[in-house]
Length: 99
Image (cartoon, rainbow, N blue to C red; front, side):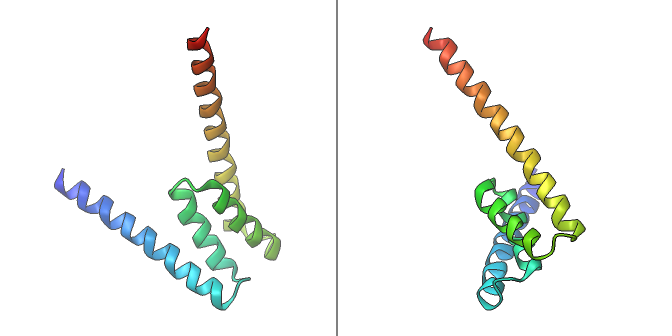
């Protein structure tokens, strides 16, 4: 159990480092596809879907044929669909309890 916690913490710290490095890279080159892609991945992992979408759309606009960016965009869209479904179910449950 302790090993799992340690690994999870390591992953979170790496994710944070990725976000920071991507931000620094984008300050130097706001059109850097790799930095946009990496930051989008980090946002996706932390469920910041709007920020992830903004970055991945910028990356797609710069390099529309990039396979990794396209796959990331598809993953983002799937996560957005799941979130929308969850919200609809939650709303439905709330409304049914009010009746």
